[in-house]
Image (cartoon, rainbow, N blue to C red):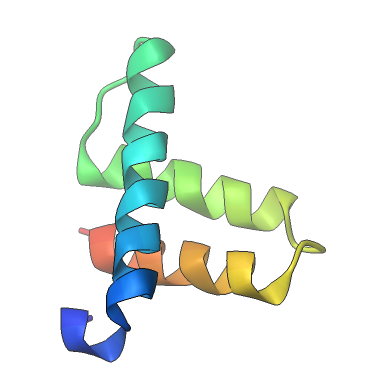
Length: 68
């Protein structure tokens, strides 16, 4: 996924989501490789399947951006 697909605000939000995932993994003593970040984001998206559509969209973009 290219950055130009997202607005600047959406890109900033996607980066924040990815950063939050890295912090969570680090605090739990896990590695912060792309595969681990992607797995955490996918689990989060699945657990929050009934949340707002915008949140789901940001998680989907984050997954596409990080996926190895």
